[in-house]
Image (cartoon, rainbow, N blue to C red; front, side):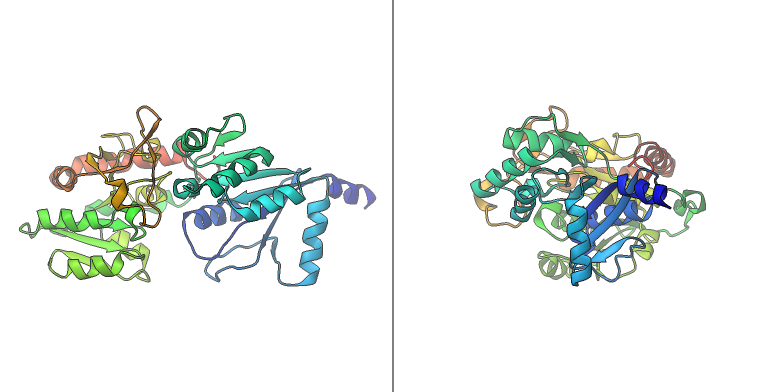
Length: 377
């Protein structure tokens, strides 16, 4: 018993701190990772939070900081020499700065998933640099996020490590080939936030180009500040449907043939992997971290952005990026958006080439198993 007790004291204790309010990409990835953690002879994992949605199902070592007993235990772990703090997103957070100041003697790992695209103020930039100074490691979800962090804020790269998001691939053997459906309508999908940087309005432009083709329909799902405007404008078109965000996502994927990701900035692109796991090929913007998943003509199709955006007219837009990463040079550049015409041409190309769809889908599955499994993460 004494030996076991001593052994447990010597085990490293990982303290995970994350905001689980809502179910965005950060939350989804963390939940998948945390629930797949195996028993480890060297590590104990603990998850602390104040708010959590009931739909965010986590099964072990969960501690709400809503009672004195859990708070005392939390402080004991923090004071332990064997504990490491692991914090998710918001590297420019003032709360993270306070944790860094209070526990400067501890190892702190910060996970950055793309919040830095939204940082433009001097105050946040200073806090980010201080947090970077105190952090033991910074883990980014893509090379693009890493390069943006380095080049936008003039940081050294010695602390930054790229770890691509991981996904559960255990059910791949049970997926039927969805492209065998006999439906004569070719359905093009969009799944994501209805915000400027995700560029959902591009789907309206594309739908207008094919308004006279009664064999192509468009299906959009998501929520956000642009949704009312998109719903209003889509009513003028008979070939586009805007689904409620509560609509069953499984049914959405089962009813589309391809997915469009027309983003203006995209640190990684979880939705690309999600579609790939459903054997749905993706047409996406050739920007930021997307080419780290999609190899053009191999496991998806990429579209080079060509439309310059007027920075003066976008300064008040939420989540508008001042810079993105050029995938070829890996340097900072001003954001652009793709042409609807270029996307529509690729939609027609896939619609008329079922064999290409099958090849892209198969290759994406292989790419996910090789590079984006939860085991790799």
